[in-house]
Image (cartoon, rainbow, N blue to C red):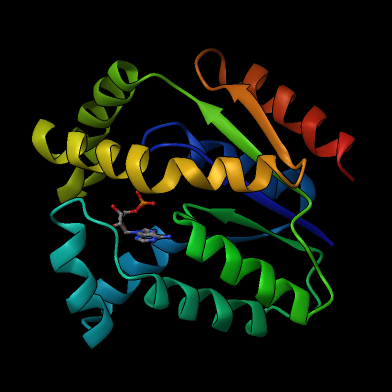
Length: 191
Ligand code: AMP
C-alpha cells in the first residue's frame, strides 16, 4: 500500500495537488476538513459541534477526527492506499494514525509537506473565500487564527515524521504542474 500524508498550512495547495495525486496513484482521499463539512451539511450532532470550532478557526478535538479516520480505513479496507489531507494535525493524531495503520499491518510511506509563506497563504485564502463559500475563508482575522493554529499545534507533526525519515519538503509556490512533478518524484522515491 501507498499511504501518503499531504501536509501543509491552510491554502498551501493540498486540495489541488490531492486531486492530481489521486488520479495518478489511485489512492483513496481522506480529508478530515471535507468529512467534517459533510457532517455539517447533514446536520448531524457531530457536525453541529464541529461547526462552532471550525467557524472560529480552531481545531476540533483529536478523538473526533481520529474516529472518522478509523471508520474510513475500515470502510476502504483492501484499497491500494490512502492520501491523508489535513490529517494528522496534532502529534496525538499522528500517534493514533500510526497505531491504526499498524493494526492493519500498514504504515505511512511518506509525508509530503508543501511549503508556502504566511503572506502568500493569506492572499490565497482571501481569494479562495470569494468563491469557496467557506465561512472560515472570509476574513483576515479568522485566516490568521487558522495559520496560528497550524504553526502552534500542527508544525510538530512534521518533526514527528522527520524523525522517522519520512518527511519531504516541497516548495508550494509556482507552477501547479511543476509542483506535482516534484511530488511524484518524492512519492516514487519512497515506494
Ligand atoms: P481544512 O478543510 O483542512 O482547512 O479544515 C477546516 C477546519 O476543520 C479546520 O480549521 C479545523 O477546525 C477542522 N479540522 C479539519 N481537519 C482537522 C484535524 N485533523 N484536526 C482538527 N481539526 C480539523
